[in-house]
Image (tube, rainbow, N blue to C red; front, side, top):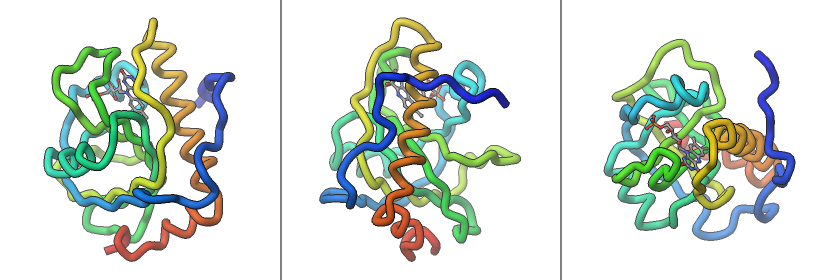
Length: 167
Ligand SMILES: Cc1cc2nc3c(=O)[nH]c(=O)nc-3n(C[C@H](O)[C@H](O)[C@H](O)COP(=O)(O)O)c2cc1C
């Protein structure tokens, strides 16, 4: 696969060296289908969090892009990096707030309906509108790299082993 184009104007490591309150925020939910544009139009598979998890998130955070760790399904022993957009998806003019996430792992099958644990470890950026689909894709690919790089810092990497994610 070709290396995705990143936004050259953005820093690839964000936030403090250690998570500060309200991070890390831990929540449990179910994976649900969004509008399905993630894989089809963006080439970046995404899924949505169920309303209970969305409500928890909306009461804790403003809209924007966040990063952290996640585990899904019945085998929660594997923890993956993830990036999540909380908001209205202005590019698509959604009328309902959603939590759309991408997990940095290539899954063989869809996992709608399975339980998910999410640990939000930090904030990446504000939600934006874009002049083109390519610009949106470039920023999401940059978010993915920001999450990867930012999670490599020791205090963030250590959270991967938190028992909350693995049970
Ligand atoms: C990391 C990430 C960042 C995103 N940032 C934005 C954004 O700034 N503006 C926007 O309109 N949509 C943003 N989106 C949302 C995408 O437009 C949305 O995920 C896509 O439409 C797929 O959603 P769907 O499955 O509900 O169709 C972001 C999604 C992700 C995963």
